[in-house]
Image (cartoon, rainbow, N blue to C red; front, side, top):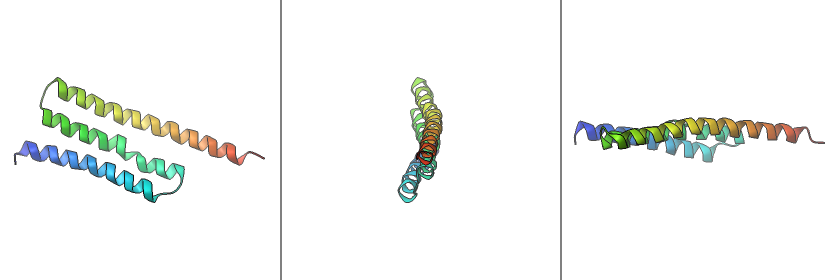
Length: 100
């Protein structure tokens, strides 16, 4: 096994571990905001680590740059989506308390 292959495997399994831990926490936690917190590591860390593993495996070139760009989009999009869902959940909870 070459050092290149070891780097790819470490990155890949770190990303998979983030995804699995997020899924386990999602099942275990209760409440909308706690579950939203549990899901945060998946798009922010898990997908970019997996994308980095794929890019390292592809080697230098256009394909690797595209893969890294997709990982970056997931990281940014996941953060923005989590914030939007959190705000919507908080607003819905607040409106539910103020109803007669």
